[in-house]
Image (tube, rainbow, N blue to C red):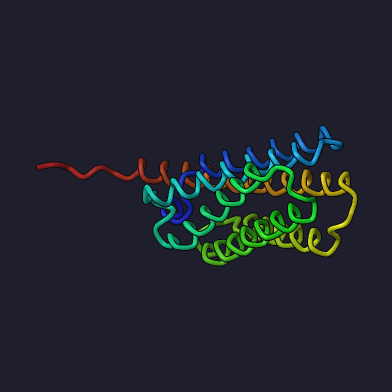
Length: 194
């Protein structure tokens, strides 16, 4: 049942690893230029959106119930990624609002998914915390947009590392659950054929 709702744990793990990698790169080079930050963010959001959209369009099991929202999330992520590549000289303020809008949309969808899965998934709180973290991150960007570029870089880096780590933890929990279900299925007695 859980596989039908979320999909394969490997895809979640790739999304989480991409977020952690993006965050670590941002933290390792905190004085990175705004253009490089825009390109890193654009690449991350573009890949994330393409993965969501591809899974939805292929009608993978985890996408059946929320196809409209998943298509919207994938298209918005791809659009924001493309905007960052087309206009790399975008101002800091505009970039912050783009990132904040993306984080708010993603956070709201993650919380909605966690509420929907609360009975099917043992550690749905990981997805809820990720969603809340996304909303808090969006709010911080909107509240203090004129903060220094270094502080913004650190905020973005830590957000990506923490949210990516939570997604990796959720992927691990899903992997354990899927393995447990597979073992239970293989332990059932086979029916005799006549």
